[in-house]
Amino acid sequence: MSSLIDSLRPTAWSRFLLVGFALIIAVMLGALVAIWGIGTRELVIFTLVVLTVIVVAIPSDRILRLGFALWIFTFGFGWRTIYLAPNLTIHPSEVLAVLLFFAIALQSLVYHQKVDFSIPPVMLLLVAWSVIGIVVGVMRGNPIDVVLHEFKIFFVAIPSYYVVKHLIASRRDWERAILLSILVAVYISGLGLMDVFAPDLTKRLQGESVETIRTTITGFDRAGFLFYGHVAAGLVVFTFFGVTVRQLVAVRSNGWIRLIWGSALMADLFAMYLSGFRGLWYAMVVFLIAYAFVQKRSWVLLVLAALAIPFLPSAFMQRFESLYNLQYADSSQFKRIDRVTAAFDLLKENPLLGVGWGGSGYVHSDLIQIGANLGILGLGLFSLWIVHLIWRMFQLTRQSGWIGESASGLFATFCGLAVIFAGEGVIVWAQLTVPIWFLFAMGYKLDELARSSVTPNFGGTLVAKQVNL
Image (cartoon, rainbow, N blue to C red; front, side):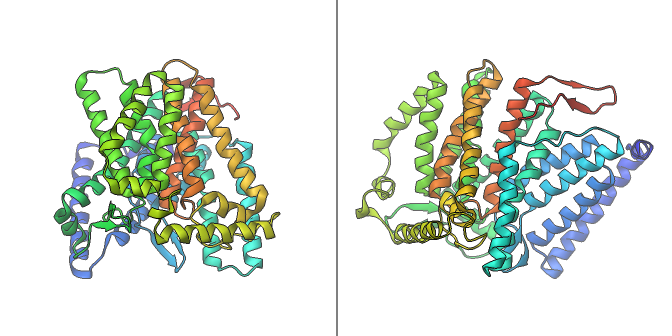
């Protein structure tokens, strides 16, 4: 295999042929799009097939790292999914996570490398227990496509963990992956800003007459994030907001670099504001308090946020208060209350095993939905997983240098995500959940890097001294 890879190293002629072949493929794809009306979904499928062949046929470090970067970029694909059944779709981020996991296993066989397949016990127990959710769901007659759809989103947490565990071997790798995720968040934020400030551009990209602004009953204008596919894009932006704050606060560079990070941070803030998700706004409050708690010099962020409140429009304040002031409540809020009440009743009636995947419907509260579907034990394992990650990040914040700074951003983010899990519906959408699984895995990897030494071997493959977590 190594001789095969050596033979594939590009020469001047091979580069020329490769460029020519790429141009031919581009022309053919353009013709297919124009003549047969092939859309983004079909192009994504074609691209994934090509990547599958490349990654499986040549599982080298360079190819795997390229696949890893592409996986992070798929977090920005939004609602572009592959249709399998009415209630069963696959997101490209799920496909690449599983694909990279098997490619890593294949590489270990090809190069006779010893691979550490240890995994945090609470994470393994949670996914194992979720298998029971399939059995219970099928026995209760829940739609099989819904059962599989909800289960696979939890299952993909395992390959996501291993991909990060084995493809990040140093601080440089970790920070490069974080940088790519920040770029994805800024890209998504730009789509929301475009809907509000350049709606004509959005309409040209969409190729149809659409409304780029969504107005709630309280009069708050929400960005549609139409090119992303859903207003829930703000939740993905929040997932990577904490690491963006870390770049701005911890960076030790010139003013231009700080200006760039500050601009990225402002774009994220505007996007989350324009998304109009109340749960997201409450999560931001928790984030700021948690971050200021572990980074004392960051109290200025909390003060600036407090000073900005009087300048926000009254529609924002009414929507923010609607959670506890029913004078400003809208119909969706009452629907959420009904859903949560119904799911909680299911939990009380089926406390041990729950009603299985797909049994409680879309509750719009992840914690209650997990409890109703998997029972008290499933809810307890999921909650323990989150608490464990928060606690580990809090412990790491006490370290000096980049470890402590990075852990501070993750600690505050995980605290905010706990609020989102309580009040929003995320776990039924892979496009929203896989980025969270990625960030959880990055937290575990940060913990591992803090307790292990990483050195390259003479074969060119990065090898880390693994520590069981």
